[in-house]
Amino acid sequence: MRLILASSSPYRRELLERLQLPFEAIAPEVDETPLPHERPEHTALRLAQAKARKIAEIHHDALVIGCDQVAMLDHQQLGKPYTHDNAVKQLRCMRGREVVFHSAMCLYNAATGQMQTAVVPYYVHFRMLSDAQIEQYLLKEQPYQCAGSAKSEGLGIALIASMQGEDPNALIGLPLIRLIDMLQHEGVNVI
Image (cartoon, rainbow, N blue to C red; front, side):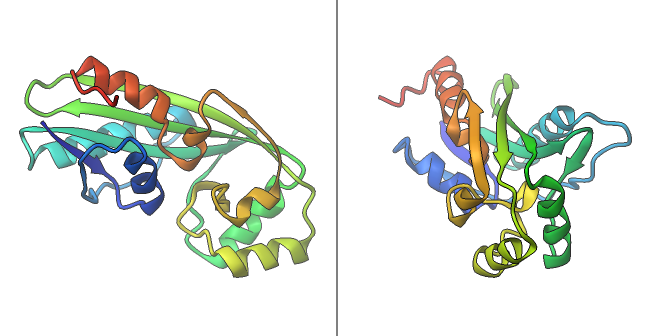
């Protein structure tokens, strides 16, 4: 079966390339607005499923991987900042604190309707950053399309004091350990 990554993220594409399976990446058009009073892990899972279903509407013979990530600080969702000012606000709130990144994934078999889902949390404790450090980071990295305004796979690692979770790839947005299990359940062996 064809394997499709329902994402425009170059970071997710790079992660999936590690598995050395042929795939294509197609960006789904999905409204990512959280629903009122929706928990972050539910938002992430709902969006991952919506992205996979959206691509499956066109590609009926594919295994479609849908992904989404929502960061949570206390009880507040931190989405993509999109602008410099929003990223500054997010990073100021996050300094010296722990943020939970909920990475949701859906593997949808468009031919059978079989859907497997998972939400993999990753806990990140941020350093006490000065305003100057935040500005310097944002000018260099410009992570305006990343939940929580930080890219651990780049210079963002300098913002982080510690990390904890079952799969470090989840922080980047694609939990590969869980994905390998899902693929095997569909008869796709990575090795």
